[in-house]
Length: 581
Picture 1 (cartoon, rainbow, N blue to C red):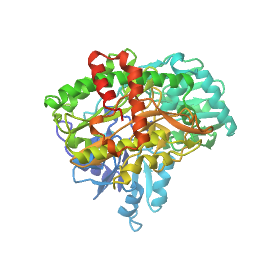
Picture 2: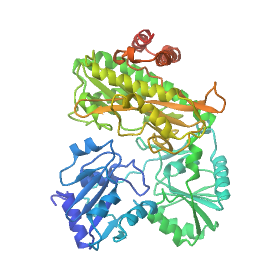
Picture 3: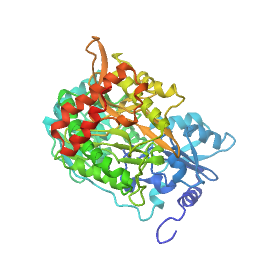
Picture 4: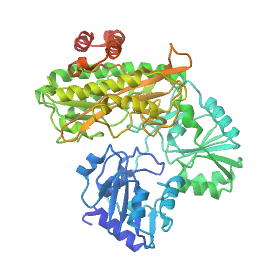
């Protein structure tokens, strides 16, 4: 240690493990509410490893340490962390089973607030010879000196004209599902579900969701959180987390429903100690909030128009200034934030903007530094993935553009293939109940035909002024969730060549009826931002693809032209006139 700061967090953690008789420790990138959206004081994995991605897990043993990431972060992790950690996409439980074989009696520690019973079983099944030990206090919390101070953002209610459904209506709707499963009450361990039911949000950046649990009984809603101020919600009582066990012990309901995939081992212990009958089933709130009501859908359409105005004004500015070599990635992101902030209904970015130029775009979730950011350069690509929270919805849009003329024909062919995949997925017609995996494969086809693929899902659900990434709906190779009318998702194929370029295009869409096929569904774009005509190899488009692209750009012009500045109108005119395929 030096001046209260750990000089070698890995060595300090290993010393802790040795003193406490542990052979290893498992550290996921999550907080006690199992959220991947962390405040600075919860960034335990970053403190230990230096990795700043939004998803990951580390296992530390006496002589080995590994960081587990998915394909989005393999390249970024290799640049961020020291060689003392192995970087792998292998399943953590399989790696641990090999690293500590049967001949080695060992105890592996974990924080029960960061583990669910479901995750714990995965490790126990893979390594039945190991003892997995709950640690009362996370060792990182013990070792982390000069740790940032915990934050407590204010919580505020959302008006009915934005939500379209009151807390009382949602309460009744949820209880019907709970009672059908034989339970009398529901314990919610998912903060996003708590925020949705209570129609509340916070001022926290990116993730406007209070860190809270809730108990839904027939006549009362009880919220558990350490947030200082909680707004007055009818029939809702607020308790600190320290009072949760007492409330559960005295709850009227004898039978509680809970979701083991989102309930931490610590909370599960509280529920078992309450001596209630526990019924396990998927959280019913997730399926309900995934299907947006009429008011929410109207809000999504409105906020995407507002967001598109900001993006078009930004892109018009960038077209003139970007190729000059005087703008860096960070200042570009800041300029976009200024454009969005002009709208009075804007509440903040929905995630940290990915502003990536040239080879930096090959990092799927590139994180632009606040100082020393790369300058944009003429003749190269620029990937911008950004979104906003508005009082009536959430946006998420990715566009890849050329900074000045781009001579690389290969780059254009890849761009066109990515665009073809987006168009194919958007225009596909499918029967009700089709899983997201079917759409995922359609979006990948043009890239597959060229021998390329991408290591991320094709799309994710989008929350209504909640998390920009909302499950259960996804478009991925493993998605089995049926797509239903009223869902809102992203479609975002991409292609990445390390150290050279990255291309991704993303629209948010809503699931709508397929008018020509009763009983079937399709997608309708909510995002209204043009694609880049100069990067499209028009000869590679089919007649139907060109027709859709012309319709899309014409619809943008018709919807937004009168709301733009003169410069924005001029920029949009060039996209409309150059897209008469």
